[in-house]
Length: 121
Length: 121
Image (cartoon, rainbow over all chains, first blue to last red; front, side, top):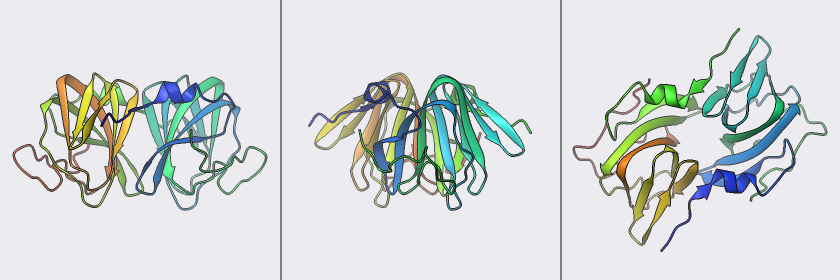
C-alpha cells in the first residue's frame, strides 16, 4: 500500500485565513494543527495544557507577561500550562501547533478570534 | 525576560550518532526528540502509543508490513499504535519525533539499536 506523507506546505496552500487552526494529524489524543498568523492575537492561557509552537515559515513573537520569545523558521517553543501569552506576527507567519485535541485557540479568553475547533484539512 | 527559542538545526549540531534520540522539549507528558537516521532500523512497534515522525532534512522511508511511506523535508507521518514499522534512510536524515516521555526507540523489539531514553540536549 502506498501511504501518503503529510506535506506541510501543501496543507498551508489549502487555506488563507489567519488565526484559524486546521488539523492535519492526530497522535493519540493530541493534534497537529497548522495556522497562519498575522497581526496581534489576544492574550490568553490554557489552564490544563502546555502548547507547542513550531515556526515553518516567517517570524513569530510570543509575548509573555514577563518577557517574550522570538521564533524564526525551524524554531520552536513550548508555552507552559497556565502561562498567559500573546502571539504576534508582523508579517504572515506559518505555524505548526501541537496540543491536545480539545484545546481552543483563545483558551480562557474567548472573543472574536476564537476559531472553530477540530477542523481538518 | 528573554526566553530562548529551541532551534532544531543548532540542536542537531550537538550530536552525530545515529538512531539515538535526544530530547529537546516537553509538552505535558510528551517529548520532542531529534534523531539522525542512517541505514536500516529494526522492525518494531509501540503497543500503547502512536508515534509521529517529521523530517527536518533528508529523505526517510518508513516501511510498514503492508506498504511504505516516503517522507522528504517538511513532511510528516504518524505511525499508529501497534503497527510494525521500520525506518530506513539511504543517506543521513534528520528527524523530529513526538511521542510520550517513556517511549523507547525500539519499542517491543529491543536489540543493539535500543537507545538510552530521556537524554536531553
